[in-house]
Length: 595
Image (tube, rainbow, N blue to C red; front, side, top):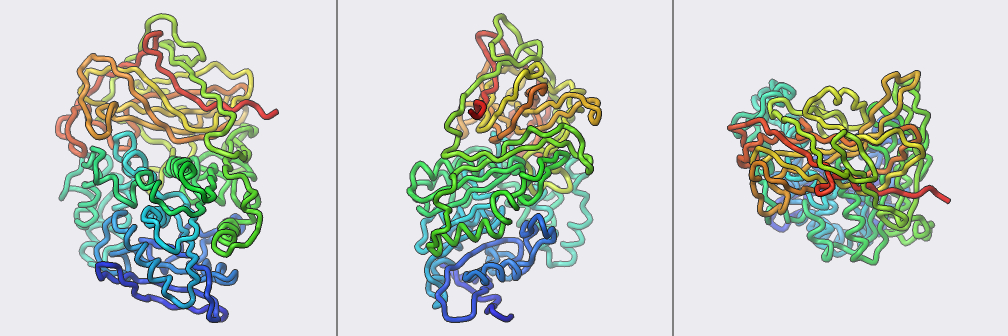
């Protein structure tokens, strides 16, 4: 290829002798060059679906991506993760990436074309591989661009969440087992499975699941699913960056994610945690995007307007955004990155509330910059739940509670949210939640129509006082922006913003779960994903409380059985208290109007 040297399938030895297949793209000439490095489980020779721009929707091949950076003076290296495609060894999801990444960095530094200023980049799993090697502080690492990944704590968000299991791990396992299968009989057995039907017939068991034909995938899936206690398993590099913040490489890092991406919390936590202990430049970018879709202006049924994509707003496009970061920190070019605000978040809201030509709700939004996260002017403001289903700045004066029954055979369905890899069972984004009002096991609390605009930007928590007749159950929380009725939307539009849940056995400790005593009152805290939204005048804030969000998360059988097992499901009769002594509330990060 003219102007670019390409070397494919170089075999890089890991410390245990396993050979890792590696492709190198570099400029002609001796160098040395700054190096950009990506490790992927998705085939280093295949296109990444996210390598596109607003102007060109078709994803570029990895060769085309490499050619862009080679043209700007970089060598680009792609590697298949251990056990994937042309690399040797056995694939163990997430847990081999730290050492393999460090070993490859060491090999790269001995190449005559490498200037020992290595940057890492990549989306999703390729961001997890970056954070994994960053935890070990390898020599030569100069900068990172963590795009929608890099687990801060996979136990609390990413693999599990609030004690429940994130079932995107199951859909990911099925899709990748099918794509990976080399044995024709195994491939045929996997292809014959109806994954949607399997989700309707839970629980699954080893040997009785949609991926039983691929036991290596089934084994790791059930290991994660059944491993409910936060112990040393969850504290390994690759899934627990926060446990390595002190040791983590002190290099400049972009932490990028979207409000409808499951790694917004990871981006927020890694940015805050590393900023506190490192001197290097950290940057946080959170947009109104689903996983890897940062060049789109919509998510689900909602449109956020021309300001939403990276393209034309934060940079010419995603290629330029990354290149400028590495130009500054891998090459040392003075290009103004140092003067840019460290925090840039997209505040959703402020649109017309009409349907656009594609039938999506015009919710609108704008970018906000800040020096830190949470934003400096944040006013932490509680809204209290009342027994009449209202939300108010004032706590209830008398006694009150709301009861409902939760049947694990009829869980509340997932409709949008912060999801990745869920297709074809569930989909990410913002959707109308109005139909939820029909469910008897979903309790809605709402403000009156607002008499002024109200911006909520930052982390959100819900504090509930609860009781149940079951030894264990879940409580879920979802924050919603309720658009009023209009000519286009005669019934209004209830737009999901953020959500969270807690499996109550973990209310006091992730390490030492305890059953509930039936009828006893407990205080619990539900951590929601971070958010930025402008609730416009005339809109209402709505908080939905229930006990399931399926198929996003596994269903609690309410029986107190071990995680991943479901032999004796039962109905739980749950109670939420809303009174002066037990003031259940949502704590919102309110941002005062700009002066």
